[in-house]
Image 1 (cartoon, helix red, strand yellow):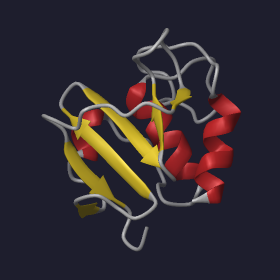
Image 2 (cartoon, rainbow, N blue to C red):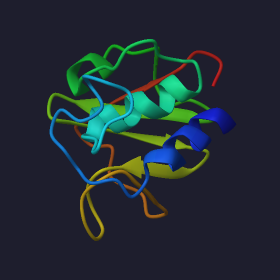
Image 3 (cartoon, rainbow, N blue to C red):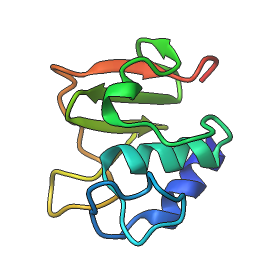
Image 4 (cartoon, rainbow, N blue to C red):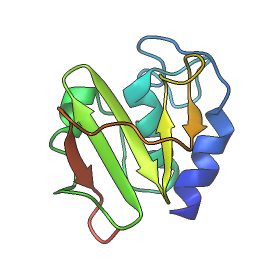
Length: 115
């Protein structure tokens, strides 16, 4: 979990870029699933980036204790240690941390086994 937070912190503040983080891990901007992929990759939980739809089948079903990925066909975000890593909502676009929750309605919740 700490490694996922550290990885996410490296890209927080970068601009939103559709497809960002999918062709190369180090990119000039990241989209929603590229952001989640980057954080999970930094923790050794993902070998290659996933699109939002693929995150609907990631890991184990349901919420995790430390990391939960929420996904539907058009968006993905993660909650890591109680903070939301998301590219939308609350003041702009691009990878950033949010303290306010987002409704999980319409999203599938998945988590890395054991986390």
